[in-house]
Length: 231
Image 1 (cartoon, rainbow, N blue to C red):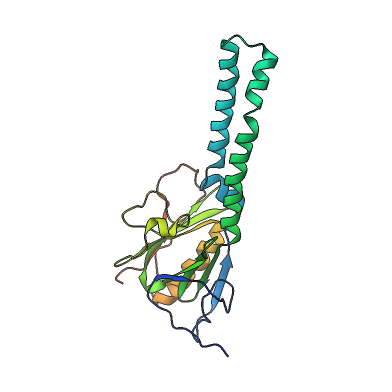
Image 2 (cartoon, rainbow, N blue to C red; image 1 turned 135 degrees about the vertical axis):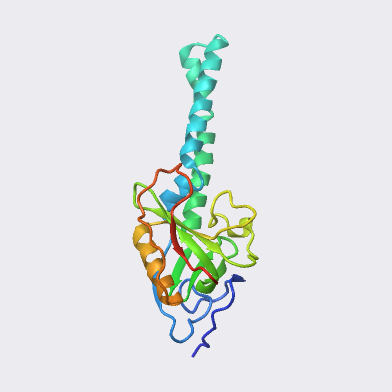
């Protein structure tokens, strides 16, 4: 039998052996796993690694190279060849970024239990971040047109987790007060509902539940999903 571990204050630990996928130790008695999932790699590539913008950049670069060759007096065929020899470099660059997104999605597992959120991630050095409900001040939800979405978590009290320790599982641009984020999860509204109900049950009080609607990719701050309050 393996010893069950208590729920600790939020922090980061190295992953050595997982008795259950995504968890560094067996849950304490009475704690239930409510949901587990991983980022969708395509959504991660588009919205975290910005593959679309990178592809646009390479496209503009190739077109500019073609017209520069024309301006230098090359024929259309020669200018095309002058442009196309750099195409493999662009494809390799895009492939590396897409591969990185795939690896991040493949090695990440998010877990929502009845008492905490656990994030296991890391390609070369897997780590686990433990986020007890008592230290989650609020959660938000941002949904995209494909149903995938992001769920950032605002922590209360002193937060020992740095932005770059969490990245890419951190809310963008929150440098001074990093917010862990369940990123690019499928069926994000259902996941957010599961988290909402778990937070309500844990805190034993009603919590504000605003209407959550799909938002554009470049929209403002996501609507608040739940507030623990008074923790």
